Image (tube, rainbow, N blue to C red; front, side, top):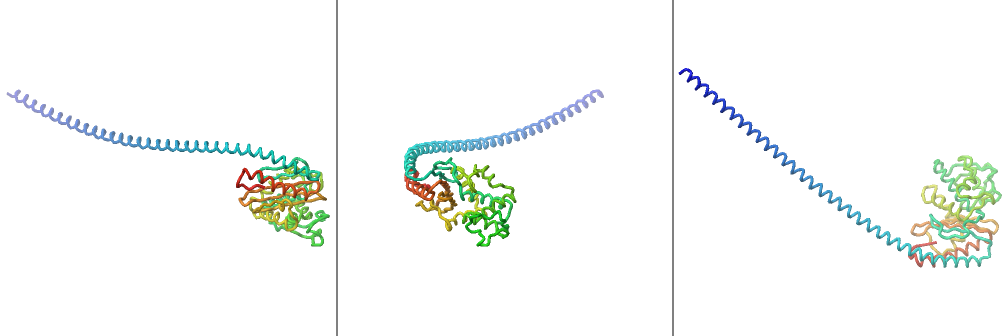
Length: 363
């Protein structure tokens, strides 16, 4: 009986333990299932977010692709337009070549009627020569050599922040045998004071030689620039033919470009030079400008002469703002030669070219 009781007690205890263990396993399994469910939910949510991001990225890629397609389409359209323009330009050039052959023949006939030794000239825009004659032959530059030197002076003064009204004393070596304004009668003698602006203004607007000599000396003393050497290196302006040397029309055109490039900067110093060139018609006159039957927004020039020769450097700006440069160099009967060439250009050049380039203004 005692053993029976003990066995029963042990059985009951073992059964209770087994029941408790089973309950714990069920609870753990339930918790694990809940955790797996939550993990599955999280993974599902993450997958949905990644799917949405993929859809957005695909939309962005499609938008970018559409932009590329549009840009490519626009580029192809531009290429097509460029090809059409190139074709039109080629046709225009072919027609111009034909017209210019007529122009050249007419021009040669005109030159043959002139009773002169020789003339050289170059006319063009601010970037290139478009009409010329004997452009590589040497001629005396005369006073149209002055604008480039005055431009150099103004550039150096501007860079060094030296005012235009800076004083300078005239030396005896500056006094020129022939001057238009800076003379002893007007109080300009060795030892007297003047300003750099007055020298530059007189050299350009009045073609004064004493003022020009003061400028050359100042550039040498202050900046160490030998004007003759500078002109030779910059423009192949050769100083073996008189005080202003000899130069070709092509290289004088380059001097004109140097001057015009400075004028177009529109600084205080540049505007002074622009005004001085325009003012010269109050003292002398440009045969070329007067002979042209055309209206210009601006017409500035420098003329030079020696015996019967005359030279001109002309700057013109049309109403559209386009710039032109004209250079004339002669060896005899300069005034008549320049006038006749100007009349011919006015009548013939515009007559031929404007038939093709309708609406564009040309010298």
